Length: 250
Image (tube, rainbow, N blue to C red):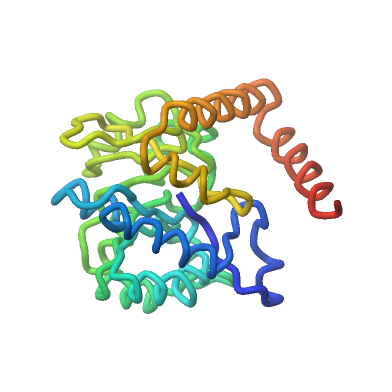
């Protein structure tokens, strides 16, 4: 699970530095994936199988088009790009024409909800509207089926998998760490969050489904999930901003 890609320009300052991976680092990750059978979108892998690495991007940042897309084409790889129709074409986000070009180039354009509001903050009617409107607008603008959903911030209300399938999605890709098994019928699938500080040894261990590396990722996720629940979304986001700001100044 990637987010933005950076090239060291001033535009990088508008991105979340914790989730911004440099273009050079991303290219190295794809070369590493190439030694493990290649990298594919979850859409393609779930339909046809393939290599060991499934690539997804959340938020639809414009760097997904300007930087990630060319690198993916160069390495013969594909990825799912989870976008919010309500933010497409706004400052810092890819446009519909760019997303169509990516789709025509073999990429998968999927739903990150309509507006990027946390799904756990919505009423049942609002939740249904967010998911159905997002799916409909992506399909209308891109011209391809939208079958995957990634909830913003990994926030998943109870029964999300069942509702998503009722609305026409086939799978929900969560932020919970883990490996996806071939032939899975589960509605909710795991992903591994790639941050700016991920080292290649850890990425290699993930590709190998190393038990120790997976356990460490799950423990970290559980701790953060506990903090989110204890503090609430707003207090947690404020705490996170302070911590990341302090790290950037070190």
